[in-house]
Image 1 (spheres, rainbow, N blue to C red):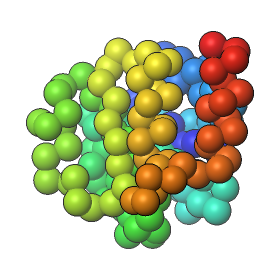
Image 2: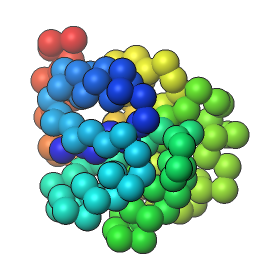
Image 3: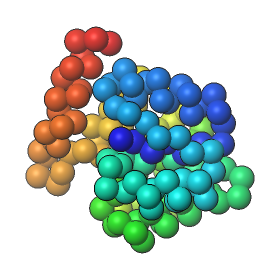
Length: 139
């Protein structure tokens, strides 16, 4: 499962649909507090977190840091309408991450997922590899 965190309901629904096309199940949270509650309850089932950087209340960076305190190897994909360098400044060494620029596309989402699921030796997670291969034939 992938936890998607965004204060925009349209973005949540769109991302959930795209993840479904790629073979993933999505859990949705509209704010950082809700995301952390869901993560604590289901962290063993969550393969990745996609989080908007600009949310009211708790920022995406703070959500990511809180998740990495619970589990430092959690894969996180940040979303923002800003450029990548500006958006992830100061957090690039904190844990495994990738970046998605809004507006999201299916191809960009797929690429971001592939990036976070490739280990340092260049080997893809076998589960993701199977899902991506299946999605290539459907998309």
